Image 1 (tube, rainbow, N blue to C red):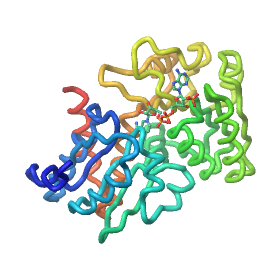
Image 2: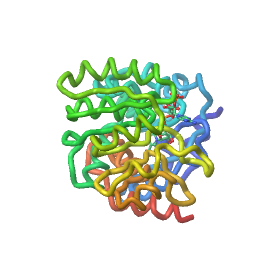
Image 3: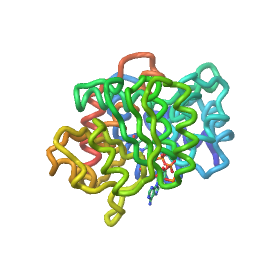
Length: 294
Ligand SMILES: NC(=O)c1ccc[n+]([C@@H]2O[C@H](COP(=O)([O-])OP(=O)(O)OC[C@H]3O[C@@H](n4cnc5c(N)ncnc54)[C@H](OP(=O)(O)O)[C@@H]3O)[C@@H](O)[C@H]2O)c1
């Protein structure tokens, strides 16, 4: 690829990007470009499709072309861990890098998914994660791991983990136990019965799987297990409406938050890493809202 040509053919010039495979669906440019404009920053945020195995070289090329930063999405968040020069300690603990900041040619790796999750919960529900008993469905993938570790770092009173591949939840639990020795920590089998039995002792349910992205995906939990007092966080977002989990939660009278809110807050934290200033949150929220409606 002729990287300089790619960066230079935009007005304003491309200085920020999101990489992934696939990447065409990403709403990050519609969120970041209005923010850059509102802050008078002469730079453009673009999508770059990047195959697995190219992250190290890609980061070097971004640096050469004068990029300031990059967001990293599926499937590159783990590869990015080893591709940076300086790894932030939270990113190390969360086990993934989703934000690269390039400063004087050095590659700094951060994770804004975990802190973005905390901000989303606070904004949507008016409570702190540290006060909640949390059930994570999908505690085995990258997002589930980031949320579980972040909950443990917050010293949540109770953390219950379930994953299709149980072994992954068990190895995550072993790590999380070391971070939060006073929390009640459980790994449960992901069956309707086991999940329903736990729900009485849970405040916040998190979907960290990719289930719900497509119509016809399996149900995450029996709808009858949801109560009005539950808080339900679906990390998934869909362009064509709400996910089945959030629809079921609303029917039960529960409070909900979706993946777009997380996308907003993790994006705002990335912006803060790049520019060392508060992000224009409402401009970014509006950009995302418009992107979803188009
Ligand atoms: N809104 C945001 O800003 C944001 C940020 C991060 C992630 N996310 C979303 O979170 C989701 C997960 O992302 P990720 O990075 O963690 O992906 P990942 O590393 O590929 O993990 C996928 C997770 O989903 C589970 N899963 C996949 N198919 C399943 C099925 N049919 N039944 C049960 N479990 C299934 C996997 O279980 P196994 O371990 O058994 O394979 C694993 O726990 C994606 O939808 C992503 O878009 C959103």
